[in-house]
Each structure stands twice: as C-alpha cells, then as structure tokens.
Image (tube, rainbow, N blue to C red; front, side, top):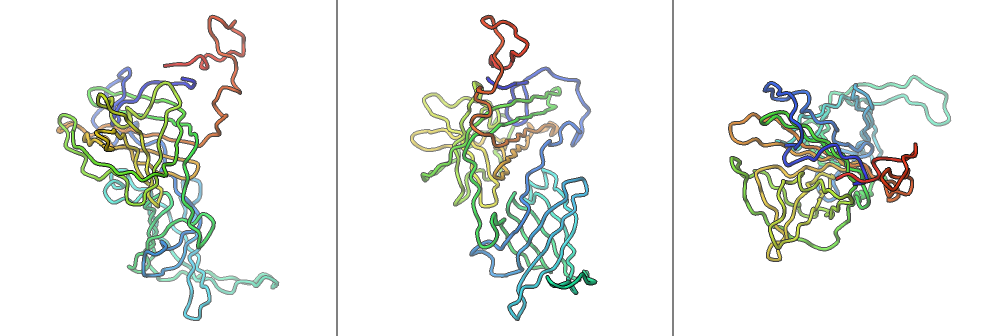
Length: 364
C-alpha cells in the first residue's frame, strides 16, 4: 500500500495482532469507547417537505465547539397576522450512548429554553434596552441523523431536515469522490487486541435501480442480527472501491471471501437524514444478496466532507460484550495521495538519500 498500515482489522471489532495484557471485565472500558463523534449539521432546519401536517416553525441551531456543548440559535414561525415571529433558543447538547442510539435512533438531544425578544433597535435607531424573556414553552430538539431531527413543542412533534441553502431548498449530500479512511478495532474476547489501518477509498454514485435480498447464515453461537440493514426506500446508493492493495471492507463487514463463482460488491447507502449502512453484497444467481452473519453491518453517518462508521459487536452467547469497530473518512482531492508530491521511495535501487520516504515503497 501507499499509506501506513498498523495492523489489519477483522470483523465485528475483532482485530488480528499481538494480544495485549488482559483487562478486567467492564461494560465499557476506557479503551472501548468510540474515538469519533457522529457528525451533526448546524444551521437551518425546516419541516420535511410533504411530511408533517403540523407547522411548528423553522429552526436555526448551532453548538459551541467545546466541552460545554451549548446549543443556541433561533426558532421562527408566522403569527395569525402573517408576520414572522422570532424567538431565541438555548440549551445543552447531550450525545446518546451507542446502545441507546441503536435502540431509538436518536444521536443527540437537547431540551431548549425559548425567549420572546422585544424592544430591539430598528436598523436606523440607536441601541435600546433589548429584552429576552423566557417563555413557558416545553421544547426539545433531537438529531436522528447528521442532517435530520425532530422538534417537539408542548407535546407536538414535527420531523425536520437540514436545508443547505436555506428554505425551501433541501439539497442532498453527494459523497462521490476519493476519501482517506482510518479504521480502528478493539476487542477483549480471549485477550485484548487492538488494530488501526489507513486506506484510500473511492465512492461512486449509483444511478441505476437495484434490489436486494437477505440470507440468514449466522456465525456459530450467534443469532441473526435483528435489525433491518437493507437500503430504505429512496436511499442514495454508492459503490465503494478500494484504492490500496488491501481492502478494509472485507474485515469491516465479515472476514469471509465471497462464495466461489460469485462477484462481491461493497455498497454504501444513505437515507434523507444522511444515515445508512455499509454492506457486503454478493451477486448470487443474478440477485444481489446480503448475508446476515449475526453481526451488525457498519452504520454510516455522513456530511458532505466527513463520514463516521460504527459497528456494534454482538458477542458469542454467554461471553461479555467487549469490543468495537469504527472508522472515519475525510474527503480528499484525487492528487492528494497519488504520489506526485512524495519523496522518492527507499529501496535497493535507491541510495538512502535523507529525503527518501520508506512508506512509499508499499506495505502489505
């Protein structure tokens, strides 16, 4: 490969490598915690077009980029006279644990306090004594995807979607292009293992219609994974291609080669909220087939420039639940790692010049 590889990740959070010192059984040891937060889009959110019959208003929301996780922004709606009413909002963002996220699909949430704004200065007036009076409204905002959420106001809930360029435009995310992918895996099943890898991958948008079927073939000691992992109706599909000698998608989806005589695809799909899955798809008898091995296929959470993937390790029956698999992808330009800006590789045919780069010779 043309990038540094530390070790090879294997399926469902198990890593092949040198076992480290065994650690005590712990529901969530420090080393098992996820490294990368799921990305969230900040800015304007509007009601899902053609969706909810209620109209709680639109939302402009952000969060402080520090440990305070303070939510702030504005909520705006129209009064009976047709004039816009703007209220200030603030609160604190709380990220859910991965297990609670699996259960209800809520990535993060924040109860919000709204403020009626008054006595503000007009554009040509001198500064006045502007007021912000807390209201008694009960408001909660929840992210259900990197760019989707629900707004609940006094017990009434409305689905919302992020608007890239402001209402009424709701532009889709296009992940086509090259990405730098960092993969991490940890486990403590029979000894602690850790692995990390770095790869280049390419995503290609699928424009044709595709259909899938599921075959259940769980790993010994496992039950089939209970949640549906196939693309949702209207999901955007991408073919995922490896640009390195070793492909990370085999161990990320399960450490088996495709059945003899078949072709394997790696596909990524996203729903309108930019959440989805990474799947290993085998072409069997002309049908695209996804095998349910009893492990979770990685969940995908994406923005235009950043993707996070997570897979939950379901243990063999009776063993403690110890392990994780995750990866982070950042968009790169095609020329970023194509070799044109690298130092010469070191090797028998190359004198060991001070500028030679030992990683350019390739590692497998």
